[in-house]
Length: 358
Image 1 (tube, one colour):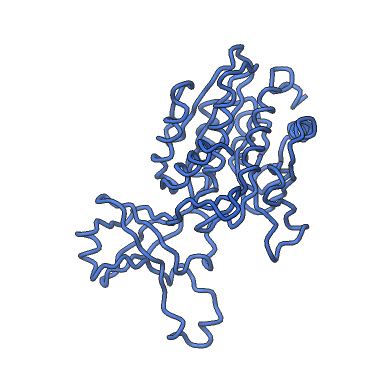
Image 2 (image 1 turned 90 degrees about the horizontal axis):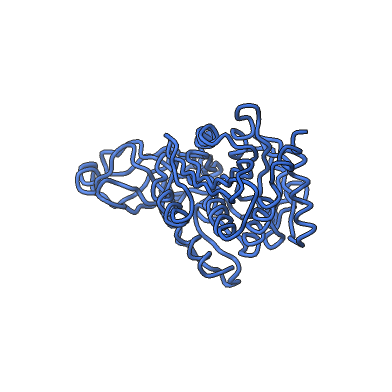
């Protein structure tokens, strides 16, 4: 992976953007692509970066969602502790003792997720997972007045995990927050950069969608704005190479190449587009895996049912520990995912796209 790509991932993951608050991410997308694409926004805030390959042709949508899972301030207790609600899917067990940042009108406020300490729990309580409703964020305020008046915390303020981007001892393994789905955003950015100096028989739209984690909302509005003929969804894939996961649950592994989704909870891929992706991997010697995700969904869920239907396929970068404060991915998987996307775009001319639904 080029150092410029590492820095792009660092920038994209370290800015904050829970659902409804994706502007910092959008600014980075425009910074990266604004010089050679036509940039527009839909009315929810999704960023649409269009590039004509020089000969018109079908409209190819490359979608990656800009939002990350996080929280929103619910209230401040009289003692100065912050109660919060989830934005996106969290497993309560991963929250305790984690650091977060509240984005306020006066700037960022750091805090720690806490709960009643185990030393004071009854035996029956100790055997249960602590629920989010029983947690709080300790921002170091002496009371409600200091938290609100001095620190600037208000109900409705977004709260994000705090987890700086890091290279692990194996330098090809990268760790950080918001890989779901800033990795997907980086994928379409790098794909459009790779296509910049090349002719392709289509118009490519790199789209940073909003509010995916709370209902695939930006996918619906941006698909309406574009009316794509075909869509490739840039995502992560659940890595199964950790203790406790069987091959039946996931055969996706870090370093094994991008994952081509065969099925996910919100969409069944166009099988001809799926086979084309597998054919490209075989011919170009791109390692790949296949993924099935019966629970959850991706932006494909809304895009593939737009208007008369849009042939769609999800391509994911294997990632460990998604929907937690910190994920882990392999640099080679990202590079190979971008290579697959670029090679697919080159093949999606009018005849090929028409043949996806023939």
